[in-house]
Image 1 (tube, helix red, strand yellow):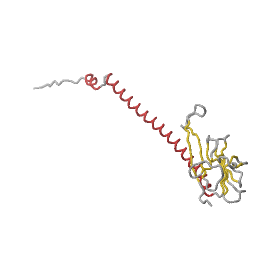
Image 2 (tube, helix red, strand yellow):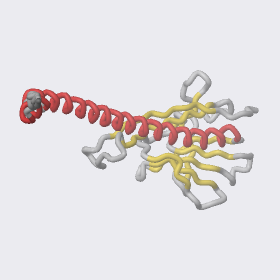
Image 3 (cartoon, one colour):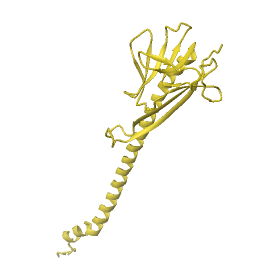
Image 4 (cartoon, one colour):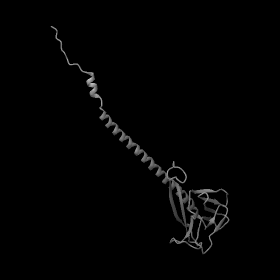
Length: 207
């Protein structure tokens, strides 16, 4: 006796259709995927912008510290300090009974006035420069400086002096600019950040 068992056959087409996504489901998945990608791109752009701003400010801070350290150390060790106007080859002290404000500072390490170190603003190149009497080499201390006068003689209250007194304090002001973004265009339409640097320095020893 032969028994035949008729089992229901699976229809491939029916199960294949059941495993596929419908058009609305695909559209929803694509919309969610697009939102995720847009969020990742926005976060990346924000991070790059924040990095560019931080790099600019850190670079400006580092440049300001270098300029401060260079001038500060020589002022503190100087024997004679004279504020005036000059460049790499000439220097004219500010006359008495006149506000002691100028674009240059001449520092003598000893009482020998033939030997000196001079810091001065070069308005043509917008730079703070340094030159000493024993060398013709001109050093650039700070770039992109926009102010005209950098050095002022004050008393300890912050009042501008009209004489080159012994117990004076030297105030240095630097206004300078720097590109906001390293990849930004240069020119009138370029984006810049402006910084103001100010410090007051006196000699270590006052006779």
